[in-house]
Image (cartoon, rainbow, N blue to C red; front, side, top):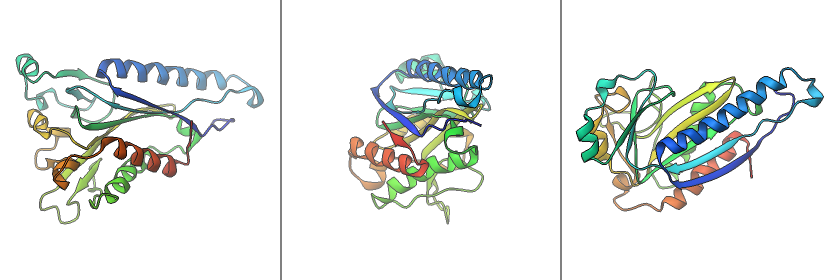
Length: 238
């Protein structure tokens, strides 16, 4: 447990950025934070240094990513198919199966030391989901969770036509997190037809603009999601 608690969080909006470059950026921050935690364990409490926290927002060009527990067969494109779709593909070190990132999708990467907030990965995931659920509610879209599945869903109660609107996939080591959530705002969900999203075959994917019937102000959505994350976690944004 950290002797010096730091709830300050540096917010960074990377705009549109290549997936691999962003992944490398995350890894650099993640490794630095884990290293500092290890060093702190060798120090007296009064000489320990606070760990940093980051909340990174980004939008990626078309890319498919496969988590550690995923099946390669869930990618339904070969190399030629990826080229035709102008998409890239990476096997990565988060949990979960395969997903898609692309234009019109808000991707959030909290790279935070949970020792500064709470040490509970289940709670961490649920709060990220809650930030999206609260945001959707502000647009009149009722969303929630489906037992046994991560992410945010529409028609989550009766499940006559359940649709995922936000996917989650994270990595954590020594209570430091990376990767995060992908929230479909104005996303081209046709790209999800090229995968078995999150390994789930019997449920659909949707986007805010499809549910509301018009393009959505992505800057406005970013601001709302950011506010809810900050409030739910008790962060001090800098």
